[in-house]
Length: 434
Image (cartoon, rainbow, N blue to C red; front, side, top):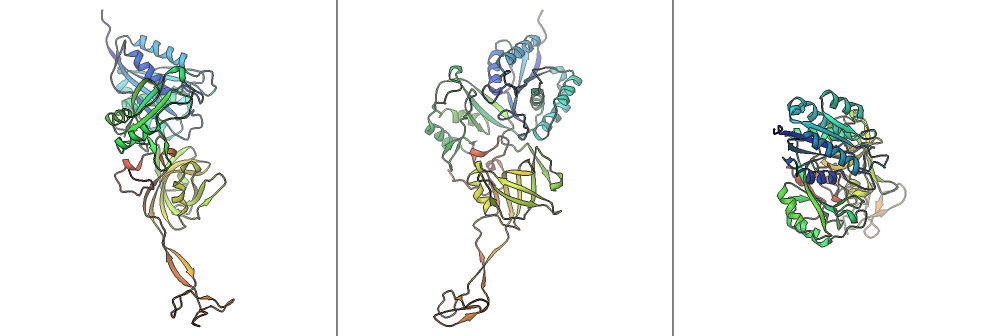
């Protein structure tokens, strides 16, 4: 007798550590294994959660895949076994979670899981809340150690059930297991070539202004490189130019990277909470200053007169030059995450620039040269012509900055931050054109 075929979403999170493994690799590994006894129905999803969460390992990513199978218990047992054996359970910060949603739960769980997914990208959610939701919805799940990964696993399942979120794609190539933890071998020129042939349909592959490759990580995980773009065709095309060490497997994910999904629009500083990300408009109310470590900071004031510090941190490199050109009175909108009552600026939109003036010695009407001081309280005098003036001349100074959008360079970009090339608005870019 043939068993009934069912659809199943498998959500996984928190299997990696700072010293190895990668949740996306485990997903790619499982996809390749499961396809021998289940049908893969769509590309897996890669969801970046709230970037300010202190418990995250590296990129705070969770994954989910959608399969069709006739023996769901076999799939559940196999996935649970692989997660148990391949996760970095010896690391105290690794607490995997796995969630299984079968098609008889798709409709009745959809609303709550979609809402949970969207909250997890913006908000702070407890393990207990995630577990309670899974229990109340009657979902299958497995928690390892404290099980914090159930939050991301449940979120990724929600993403799979949500057809409306903005998405991009990432093509990830993985290393052969025997070289994990060793320096990656790749031809740097080939990656710049991939960018030349596919930008702007792909992005953040390289950072032209700083002359560095961005898509190759430096950590000990299995990822060789990851190419991000608008569709599967573009990321595949870019990968075809890359020359590197042997690739064990590849996987293309649909992802919320590059979408600004984490940002919450607010109009008042009073509404801002720690460990959340915001879009906030206001007036620059202090001269930007560069502090120890190379970070550039200014204060922003809202319509109520409340203030918050905004920072372009040292890794944002030349982006800080834009911030340093701001002066009190400029009206801006900042985009970024808040920790320790400081906005970590990911993008800034300059709405209005105040005029800047400078007082200089007056011109002599006779010879056209600048007069010299005639002494304390005695005004100014031209030594050649003898002409004099009581006050300095007030001139408007060119600001050397324009209204518009500015973003941090690719080498400092957060996973979730939306690239300006994905905006419909016109913008000013501080980076060289291709």
